[in-house]
Length: 112
Length: 114
Image (tube, each protein chain N blue to C red):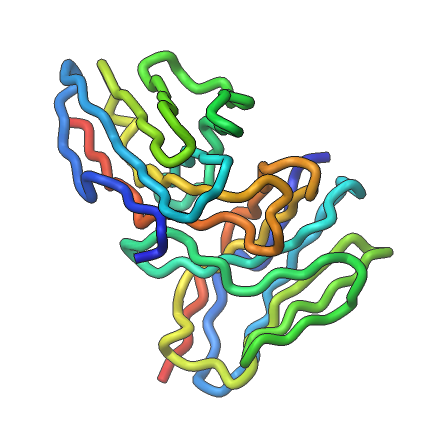
């Protein structure tokens, strides 16, 4: 019940494309869903996060879509750029606790 | 700088050595974590400290020993490691209940055990 399943494992898109990364969870107690971006040699950095009281959140070119009934959420990157090439992790947590459960990550490559 | 500083950035150690990894956060957070990140593997939670007390230990071998002397500092003491322990070790901090900001990670220590 603590797992967060992330897909795909890797993704290649052309510049300007819209990569979509999907995550699914089982634990209905989760109420916080962040996405992290990690560049080689760096630690993951918080990109955007959503709580289940909204179905969508946008920050710049990054959008989270959230489907509470399906227990799924996804990250969309609009007008993707080569600089977006990185590993993306979804995660889920409960505000009453401090521990996040992470997905296995998606390696995104945006070709010029 | 992300507000979480890890030292050293790189460490090469023999299997009989003893070394320590250090993490320092300047964000006023009250929870700190150690994660292990191996190639092509997900982030593995090792230890959680909340309000300076260890609240989680994810079946980590005893050759890894954490220490949290105060809410700003976290150490990972290493001894008699194995080559399979080579990985990126990440420290993170957060505020209880997240406050909408989740974790802040350091840049990690790249550990190589020879």
